[in-house]
Length: 371
Ligand code: GDP
Image: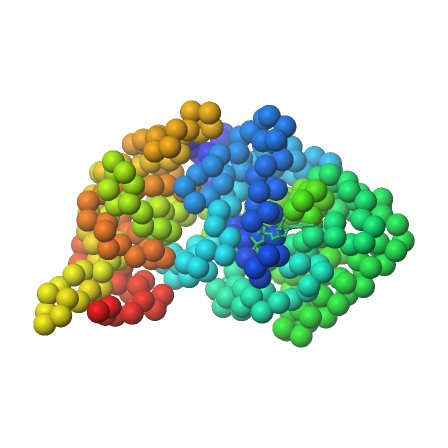
């Protein structure tokens, strides 16, 4: 089924952590996502990975399977990991849900051949501002001169196969990059040498081309999340949901793509999203205003790839977090991406929720009035 975050018996009631990928252009953000998504698919076995709206879902079993070589005895308490699909998407650095960032965790990608670049520092500052935990992927290790490919191997195993020269060049570049981070006021260390995660940020060397270090990255993400974020990841009844994109879809009209961070959404739920309202004054002006509407349909892509014909979706009566979902409803034409979606419960005061929606919008700094 399509309720991957449904807790199984004996499991704690945790939702999947949400992870985004950030970093300078061309460091390999897209490739890294392809790589962590593609491994099992290429072997003709999807491994439970499902493409969602704006995100990819990795079930815990898939992560366990892919990290087996690390012999970490991964005890996975979270149902899986949800990775946001749009690296570098302008809005997703802005995306907030009730004052906190949409992502629980981030991967900050740094090119080992280039070190810290302007957008690395921008991403770093955003992450710090939002208090988002992150792991550094030191990508493109395969570009070290003389690198011997060890497809999808844990990084320590891959490193053992390298010549002394490769190891030296790796150490030299790593030391340089650790110094660059220090100049940004940040302590970093190779993850398997890092004894004080939390104080010191972990670096995982990776190759998005040949997959070295990817098992380490997956395991570290999940372990880190479930060790330090139990409270944040505990499933709640209150809906926490963020609008990723506003799109017109043939046959559905204007739809919104959302990430349901926590809680449950139902068909027929009354919702409030931030919007721009057109008002005729002397000029035609658009003002900010909340949109109150009712969820007509909750849609996800078809899980079976071969059945996925363009424009066909699975309809759901209800969906539980964390997931990427397409919502159809009336009046979404002027909805604003990057803002929170609120659900109006039977005992809620609509006006109070409208006010809350507007506060969210002010906090992301959308202009008050767009002529
Ligand atoms: P993005 O802009 O950060 O999303 O970067 P891309 O994923 O588009 O990658 C930029 C370029 O670097 C592409 O040509 C990729 O094929 C290449 N690339 C990405 N990761 C690696 C890697 O680990 N090793 C090598 N050799 N090339 C990579």
